Image (cartoon, rainbow, N blue to C red; front, side, top):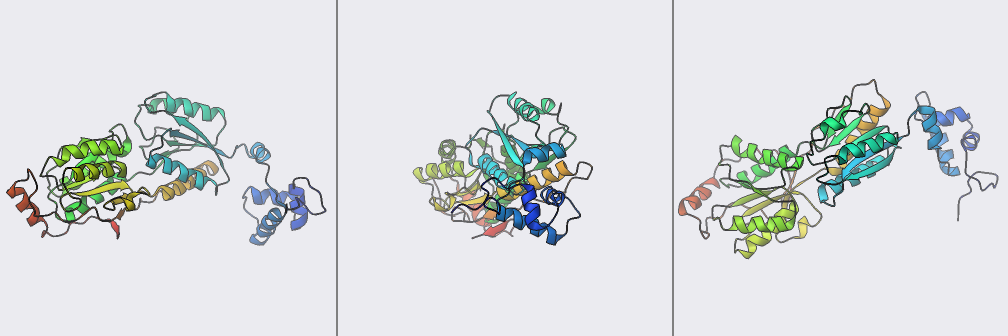
Length: 377
């Protein structure tokens, strides 16, 4: 049964004056509560909110915008892609925005359009948004264009901050996660780790490659040539066919789970067992990762945590323009260990030399390295 909009039987939408009457406060106090202003006691705030819920009252955001000079909206510039990582981050932003009281205005860009981000930003500025989220994971060389009119808070996700006076960054730290994934394989006794990289126009692919390289270099290990994919399982399969022919390969860190799954398929077809002959680590922890054969060891990305913290910092910057920005926390390093990784086997594989097998066998007994990952079994 539909709830009455206000007491007295009227079917019209509840107004702030109705909330004030029911809560026993002034209409000005109702406005203060919904504008989240200070100097309102907890008891009065609770009475106003309870009355508003009972009456089904919704604040007039247009009127609030006129009064405050803000539209209470945040613009989002995002690459139009269905890839798991970028799509999950945008979903996290949408969920986090529900708790801020700000509406989102999303503009999609297209890969390969260098004017796309600048055009999207201009569109959002014309709509009068109070702040902007740039979730544009590809280097299109647009920084100079973006900084021209950005005199408002801007949150950049998963990429270097743009040269704007009030720019914030979130979703960084993929290099640390990639380093932990690589060190997990070294801890198991693999003498080195090969890397199946993402396309290098993507900031995320570069960060993961740098983390992998840094781990090998820090431990004095050989840095093998990089094989580059395009994030798809098909590119992982193609890379797997290439890597399977090299008997020296005993461990591979793939820059995302889809490529790791394609890689495993190619290795199996070539007679290289995972993890007995080759260990594989992915990145993202996509929903299917626990259900492939074998279940995939992977680095879990904290999409919701990044979105929530990023939106909190952005809203703080919007509402407190003279205050220092909120500090960003370090990203969690969450390695989910499943069945696709194991110590290297001493069993000879086609094309693998006895000396390589001997080095791997010796590596199994070397002291463990400091990977820094939190492990889930």
